Every structure is written in structure tokens, then in C-alpha cells.
Length: 251
Image 1 (tube, helix red, strand yellow):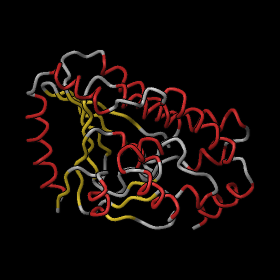
Image 2: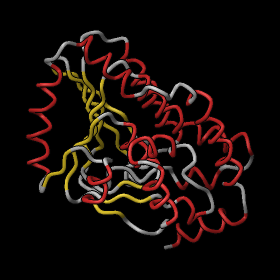
Image 3: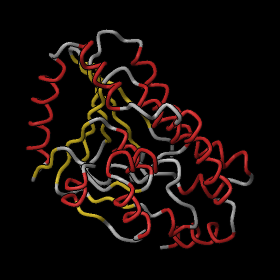
């Protein structure tokens, strides 16, 4: 089933929500829609801040759509699919608005990449994170630059090599993937509301200049992320990955 992207603008804050019935995973069409939405918001001068969230009470984001991955039959299709996550991460870093993530549940693979590409994140103790790509024969190549930028190469490697291991919300907070951690969703939302209103009241020009500072040194991502997408696009065609994906679907 196709997912959806919705935008609600209240005063000078845009809340961008994504939803997919398959644990908020992303098919390529929805990745493109999120990318387009973020670029469209760049043109809205009345918006100062973006809150990025997913809907429901289950997973925050289960990453790539396994159903669509199984449909990839050639290098071009594989490259195009993984470029979807590259497009989203580049749209987030190039946004002229600061992006605050609201993380309410588990995040896997590309979902961790989206968390890492947020400029600031609020989360609950129900959050757990995992980079499971090696277990299915690929790797978190596209999202690695964003994850490593946020938590460092050592922590990224720890997540990647322990591909079947969930990392706790406390681990993610200690490593810097989560900025603010709360016991309950209600507590998180109350604090997110207060923080966002205060941040959006600051000088928009100063916020934009700060955004540029946060993302200094990432200019090569316009090429790097697509080179990484090509690696994943090749590996997803391997017999190992096809078998692993099919076994995962059976479980």
C-alpha cells in the first residue's frame, strides 16, 4: 500500500508527517514525495522551523520497503531506489529551515538515517535503533555519512557490525543521535511544543546561518550519497540478499 506525506503549517512552524501501513517504511514514491515536500517548504518564507514526525504509535520508521527491494531486477532500478534515501537526506541538509525530529518508536536502517539528518531530535524511552543492512547482504552505505556525522565512525561501526542488535534509547541519547529523551510521549510532545515555539521565535536569519554551520563540510554529499546508492543497488541483486529478503518476509 502507498504511504502518504502530510503538512500542517501553524503560525511559522511546519509539521511534516509521513505514514505507511508497513511500519512506516518507505517505498520510492513516498521518498520522492518527502523530498519534494521539503524543497517546497524552502520557498515558504513564512515557515521558520520544520518538525518531522511519523504517524501511529508503532515504529517511527522501518527504513526501505522490502517489498519494493524484492522487485528490483537490474542495476538501474537498484540505484534509483537507494537514491531515494540520498534525495531525502540531501533535502534535509539543504533545507533553509532547521528540522526537529519527533521520534516515538523503533527506527531501522533508513529510519536511523532520517533521525541522524534531523538537526535536533526529541524521543521517548520506547525508541530503539538498529542498522540491520549487513544481515540482508547490503550495508547502510547511503545513510552512513549522516549517521557518522551525528554519532561518530566508531558508534556507527558498532551499530552496523552488530546488525541484529537493537540499541536502546539511552545508547542513542548518549551517542548524540537523540537530543532530548523523555519517559512518555505526552512529556515529549509538551516539551517539543515549548521548544519549537521558542526556537521559531528567534531571528530567522540567525537560524539559517546556524543551519549552514551545522552542515559545514558536507558539500560533497551531492555526489557521495549517489555513489553509495550505486553500491547498495548492486548488492541488492546478489543471491545472498534475495534469499535473505525472502526469509525475512516469511518470518
